Image (cartoon, rainbow, N blue to C red):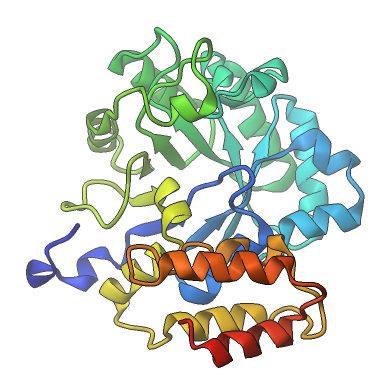
Length: 326
C-alpha cells in the first residue's frame, strides 16, 4: 500500500482504477453497490458472449447489464468479427458506450468457442475484430490480455502481439493480467493463482509504447507504490472487500463521508421497498465488514434474513437499524 505520509493525491488522479470483469461476480447488483461507494471507478460487466447478446431476450439482457453509465465497460467474448459488431449494435441501443474484448479467459468452454486467451495465438483475427468494430461503429475496443499463453511466454511473444495490434489497428488500451495462461491442465481458478506474476513485462512494454495505455491486473490490492502504468484493475480483492474502491478513492479524493450503513441503505433503496429480499440482492453485502469486528455476525445476519419468509426491503432496512448490527 502507498505510504500515505509521502503520498500526493494529485499524482494518482490520472490513474485509472477499474473493477475487473468476473463471471458471476461483477453482476448488475455488485456493480451498483460499487458505484454507490465509489463514483470514479471504471466498472466492467461480466463477460457476455456476442452470440448471447444477439439471441437473449431484451428483458434478460437488460437484467444482466443493469445500470450503465459513462464509466461502465461491457466485456465481450467472441471471435467472429461480424457477430461481435452485431452484438455491439444491440448493446449501443441500450446505452452502452465502451467495450472490451476478452483475450484472457482460459476456460475450456470458452476455448471451444475459439475465444478468450486462445485468441492471443491469432493476432491477425484479433486485429480484424478490432478493425471491423471500428469501421462499423467508430468505436475502439480495449483488449483484456495475458502476458503469455502456454509455452508462448517470452517477452518477445508478448511484445510482438501488442505491437502488431498497435501497428495494424486503432487499439489504444490494453488491460494486462500479468500472468501467462495455461490453456490445458489448469482450471480457470488455478490460472488466476499458479502462473507467477510478471509485472516487469507490463512495465517494459509501457516504456516502449508511451502513447498506449496499459492497465495492470493480477494480484493488485491497493494503489501501487510507484505510478509506472496508466491504471490498475482490481479483481479478487474486490470479492474479499467490496469497499476497496471506496478506500482508494478516500485516499485520492478525500473521504466521501458515507459510512458503511449509509452505503448499504442507499443501495437497498434502489429497489422497490416492498420487494422481497433475495440472495442476489444481498450478495454484494457479504464482505462489507472485511477485516473488521462483527464480520461473521453480519454474514450470519444476512443469511438468516434471506431465509426469513417474505421479508421486504423496507423491513430489512428497519431490522438493520433495530439490531444496530452495523
